Image (cartoon, rainbow, N blue to C red; front, side, top):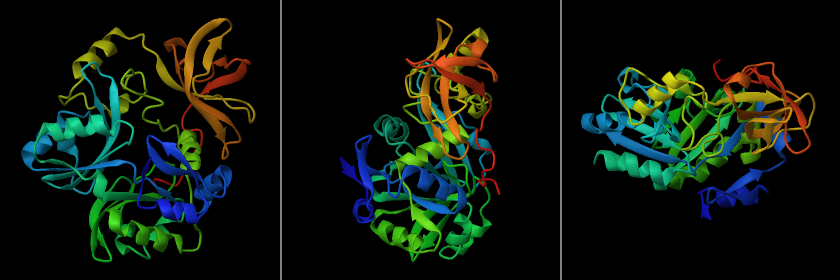
Length: 354
């Protein structure tokens, strides 16, 4: 397994390390529910250094990159970030991507670990001005209602950032990228720092009262409560943005790989949709549970867990179009777990936009 620059820190803190897409990452420290609750009420640190980062520099390089994703980059102002998707020719989702415009002629691109090789091949193959900086970059997320109060003690400029804004700044003389983004639904920031200062950044942030480490387990329950999809689990190249309920992030006014296939699917209709599901108690739907209406198979669960902040089992499932609406009662799994389709997000008290 590959190790992040913070691997030894996780072991020293008692983290339980697991294999995540070939990376040795902590699944938990004090416990998933405790870390989940701490993130919802105070602030947690997450090591996300397994993710991919790219610099796209120059007008021609940006134009080449823009044709690979569903975002309208002409509308992306300097200092703003935008969520989008990279598709194959058939409209299938290779990965979801966050693009930050650092300057008129410079983008900073953030991708997931699982499809990193495929994404890197496309981005870096598009133009010589596209550069993979993943190996030299560590990514540390601070998430929670007090995250801004903590971070401004180290980076006063963090106070200026609004939701989905970003900037280049410095940590003790080293250049970093700071964005007000996250995957938890809470006030949060993501710090993209040189790998050789990652330990210092981690220790400094962790030294503040109210900050604790959190692992992949809490990150998963937090994102599921918000209805955020997980690349490689809730979608992959076999699913399109229309099926994955991510059509909000398609800029139909732009040209991108996979657009023609999406337009054909949109016009034809009749496709499955990723839909929120919940139970009435602590029992939870699980990944790959089949969803049924009586004896008829009507879908499949992609994500499922107990939601500590909502007090019941929650998840996401691809359902036939007639069932992809809130309020339908169905069953899931071999024991016929009763589920109901729902609206997202499950958790509505998040502080991410405050």
